Amino acid sequence: EAQVTQNPRYLITVTGKKLTVTCSQNMNHEYMSWYRQDPGLGLRQIYYSMNVEVTDKGDVPEGYKVSRKEKRNFPLILESPSPNQTSLYFCASRISKVHEQYFGPGTRLTVT
Amino acid sequence: AQKITQTQPGMFVQEKEAVTLDCTYDTSDQSYGLFWYKQPSSGEMIFLIYQGSYDEQNATEGRYSLNFQKARKSANLVISASQLGDSAMYFCAMREGQGMNTDKLIFGTGTRLQVFP
Image 1: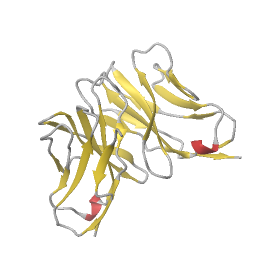
Image 2: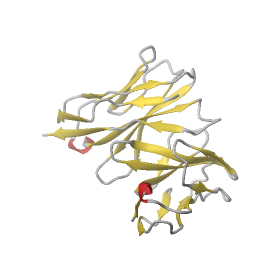
Image 3: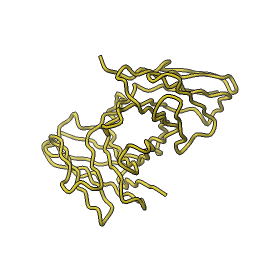
């Protein structure tokens, strides 16, 4: 089944404890993105990648890191999480010639 | 700078009626794409429809159509014959360019649609 998977789906952590949220797609998509969703703010793009080893900032990259070492994986790294990074995070992917993005199921992160 | 504005935080519509969800955008680019996504209460994001800035015809996908008015910079979503399953959050989004040189996407704040019997 074609899909975007994210792990973990739920995470509660403490301020300053490094964490990684994984994202993987099995559709051979070139483009991948990370978004965060907060009430009243819609979705905001954190980072995107247009191919292996090619990443670029979205609107809210501060406090996040990404890497794209393999086409299928695009992990989101929070080196020192803070409470303002408590949010719902979505990973998405698409093929370059198609406009539609496929979204993962989301990861709900709480930083205390 | 790019901006997407959805001025309707919530909308109600009766089943089988049509409803229009508003979206205005701001960009200095001539080439851009506009999207609508649906987010049901279960949380997943579902792509509905896409309109390119150079497309002459309004996009349609089943009961969804995008009323694209370039001069007014509006890209309203029209849902015909509403169904109870249409109750969800709807997001308008924009990407500058034709999607080959950038994948930077901005979203509006969303409109919550409730369909009642």
